[in-house]
Structure formats: structure tokens, C-alpha cells
View 1: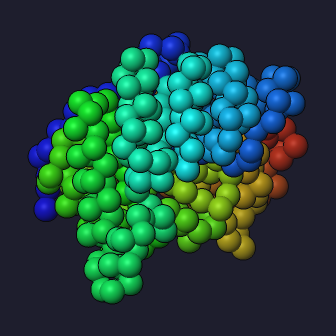
View 2: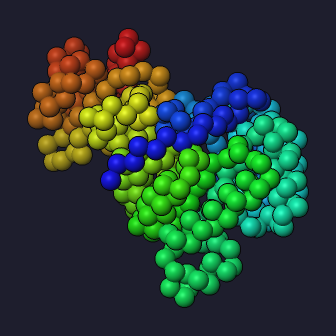
Length: 372
């Protein structure tokens, strides 16, 4: 089932950041992640945090979310937001005053969970200030933190997907009542089917931009597998405007996984000419390695993966293990490296251009990469 829906367009960070990100409409799918630790003032005093955020941006992260459990965290995040060009998002639960304080800073977006920041007047206070600041709000619904009455209905037999949609629609009704229209919605479950079904239903009922993903997806392999199943299905149907692959792993791996899911979706959508699924950057082709290998692809790929994903180049790089899986099986690569007995070959489009020893591999590879 292919949806032809085009969502509304919102601007993340356009009024306070160098890097403005558009979500929805016909804009490309946006990949994002979430900071894994609680910030402290010492984290933002040096430049290590800012540098890591910059690297995440180079790797393809467009938006970065932070948990903000109290006012102190709001102030730390607010200071950090003034130091980086990446649009930073504040994730708020339970206390509307934290959201109000975050809005005093150049924070690009606020994420709230339906019903847990207080009553209507508290919600009104947040929406009024967000409207004045032209800051969008994400309505974030998780299967594990539904409103109490919907939790009870799920225990009594209601489908989790239906409960997710109902929770989102309740909050949308409140936003509409207060005349606030600068929002996007996410509905996430740890179950693949629930996540897909909920987003299919809401995509038919609203033109709000949708953030999609599987929550608490698991460690690297399990998490990437379940996230791919859900996100790729939805993107292939035209559903979703921004994604996060939630892993019990690094932010960098979340970004790489997200970028590769969009790349896969773009290949499936080629016949449809879907401009939203633009797969840019470096594509890495690498062999799995076997007993024939003369070059350790695992070790080399591990050393180079972050550097390659951070390159602003539309190229294919092949990292191969032996002469069998070398130049001839990667003729399409702009640049490749492979083992050949006790030597290492560097090639372009299947043609060997250098023969070197293993200890020269990194230096020679970097030299050729810089020429592209």
C-alpha cells in the first residue's frame, strides 16, 4: 500500500541556529539521534562535546535530542545550544516548567509526552511561549508511557497501535484548541507490527510530519534488524519525515544505521522517483572476510568507518579481503582496497593503481581518498 500523502512543513532551528532543518513536505528524510548521557557543566566547558556534535553532523545527523530531567539540565542544554550549529531538542517529561525554561534559550524543538506535563493550563503556557518563540513541539507517544486509562484498555485487550493513535489524537486536539500548529508527531512501540500499524493509521488522519522508529529496539544487531523492518516498510509506503534508530549502542552507530536505512529505501523507491529519499554521502562496500583473506577488512573498516561517513562526497568505497573479492567484484567502486597474498592493492573502478605492503595501507588509502 503506497501513501501519496505529503505532510506539512516545519522548520527546526531556523530562528536560532546556523543550520536550519526542514521536516515534512517534500524535504528529504531527516536522520537524528539522542545524546546517551546526562550533561554536566564540565561537559560543555571544553570543546570535546561540541566537537563530537560536529562529527555527528558530518556523519549525517541533522537533529540531536537531549533528556532534560530538571531545570539545571535545561540551563546546561541552553548554554550548549548557543555553542553549536546543530539544532538541539529538549526532551521533557512531568514538569512543564522545564519546557518553559528551555524556551528561554535557542533550543530548536521541545518534545513532550502526551498528558504527563500537567493539566490544560500548564500545556497552554508551554504552547503560548513556544508559539511566541516560533519553536515547534514534538508530540511523542511511547507504548510504555501511555496515559493511564489507555494502559488499562491495552491490558483489557485494546491493540497497542490503536492506543498509540488515540493518545496522539488527544494531544492533537488540545493543540488545535489552543491554535498551535507548529508540531510533529511520533508514535513508537518496541513491537514492529504495532509501530507500523499505528503510523499507517495516523498517516491517513493527519498531515502532521511524522517522526518514526522502534523504541527500545535493543543492542546493535537486534536493534538495527527490528528498526529496519519497521522504518523501511513505512518509508517505502511514503510514511515518515524523520527517523531515529534507537540502539543500546553509540550515537554514531545510530546515525550510520539510519543513513543506511534511508539509502535502502531510496533504492526501493527509484521507480517512483521519490525525491524525499535522497541517499547521499559515502557508500561502503566491504566483504565479510573468510579463510582466503590477505587483508583484515574488519580491522580496516573499523578504523575508517567514522571518517568515511563524515565525508561530504558522493562516492562508493570498497574494502575487500582477497583477490577473489577484490577489484573485479567491486569494479563500480570509486576507490577500493584489497589484499593479494602478502600485498595490498588499491584500485579505482576495478583498475589497480598501487601495490603496497599492509603497513602502508592507511597512508596510501588516505592519499587516494583525498584525491577524489
